[in-house]
Amino acid sequence: MNKVNEIKEGLQHFCGSEMLYQIPLIRTRFTDGLKYLANVANCFWLIVDVSVIAKSLLNRSHFITIDFKRLSEEKQDQIGYEAEIIYSDGNGAVFETHRYNFTDFPLEELRLFFVNNTLMLPSEY
Image (cartoon, rainbow, N blue to C red; front, side, top):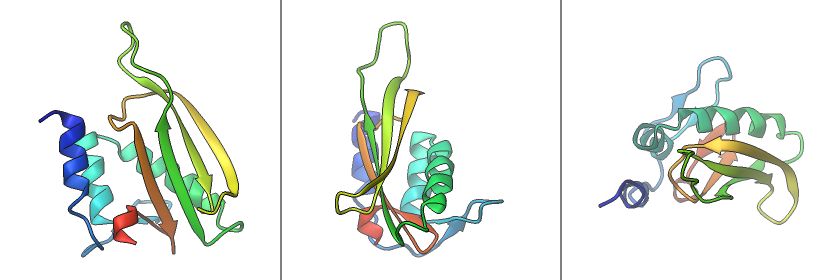
């Protein structure tokens, strides 16, 4: 099984969270599913980045959806991809879009929720 399928399969097992973890300094909490994702996809940077931005948007909405999407295919001389992350209220109101010129995040798409200072997978909401 390749890495992407392994990650997708693993993410399906998270429903709710028995434990909350906290990012030092910014004090954002995150769930078991995000801890799993950070470990298997080596993407703690993603959890920190989206937490900082989502916290800055709390004055706009108490519920924030975070949609990661890869934009370009891997190039032969490049190990990563371009991507964008869209922050919205989940009902079509987009607050911010951030573009990444390079990422090695293995999934093509990922949706996260930020509620009550906690970052989580939709299945953990």
